[in-house]
Amino acid sequence: MHYNKVEICGINTAELKVLKEEEKRPLLLSAKNGDMKARESLIDGNLRLVLSIIQRFSSRADNMDDLFQVGCIGLIKAIDNFNTELEVKFSTYAVPMIIGEIRRYLRDNNSIRVSRSMRDLAYKALQAREELTNETQSEPTIEAIAARINEKKEEIVIALEAITEPVSIYEPVYSDSGDALYVLDQLRDATCDDDIWIEDIALKDAIKHLDEREKKIIDMRFFAGKTQSEVAEAIGISQAQVSRLEKGALERIRKQI
Image (cartoon, rainbow, N blue to C red):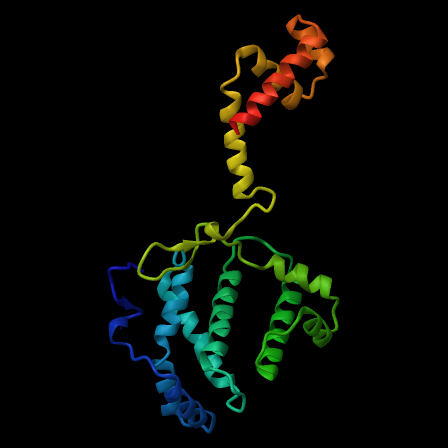
C-alpha cells in the first residue's frame, strides 16, 4: 500500500464512515437479533479501524490488500461474538480480535517450519483463548488456557512461541502525523543506562590527557588485568615507580571527570 493513495481493496478510504460509540451499541443489539443491515453498517463503520491496525504491519512484504481482507474477517468475528450485555467498548474487544486474525494469517504463511504436533497444540490453545475471551470479555491467562485443553502450561507457552511471527525491530508501532515510533525505540539495555554511558565517555576523555607511559600503565592494570609487578617488568621500571605513576594518573583522571 502506498501512503500517497487512499484506495485499498478497491475501497476509497477517504470516504469511509466512522461510527461513534453511541451509534455502535444499538447496531450491535440489532445485529445480535439477526438484523443483517445493522451488521453491514457495523462492518462499514469500522473499516477504518481495520485500516489503522494493518498499518502496523506495513513494513512486511505481505500484500496489504490481503491483510485488509483478513482484518475484515477479524472484524466480522468480533461483531458476531461481541457480548452486548457487558459494559465494554466494541473497539476494546475488536482490536485484539482483528490483530489475532492477522497474526494467524501470517503464521499460516510463515516460511519457518514448525512440527505438526506443536502447531496443532498451538492452534488448540489459540482456539481455547478465543473461547475464553468470548466468555469473559478479557484476555485469559496461560493457566486458564492450559486447564481448558488439559495441557501443561509450559508446553503451551513453547508451542505459541514456536508459531509466533518474529517482529522486526524496525517495525513501526505508532505514528501520529510525524516521525514513526519503532520497536527499536522501545528497547533498552538494563545493564547500561545513560549515566554509565556518559561516565564511560568522560573516562576515555580523561585518559587522553595522560602521557604515553601513564596510559600504558592504566591500560595494563585496569583493562588487561596485569599486576604492578607484571607492568613494571613489561615497561622496565620498578614496582614502586609503577605504584607512584598509577596513583598520580588515577588522581588526574578523577579531577578530569
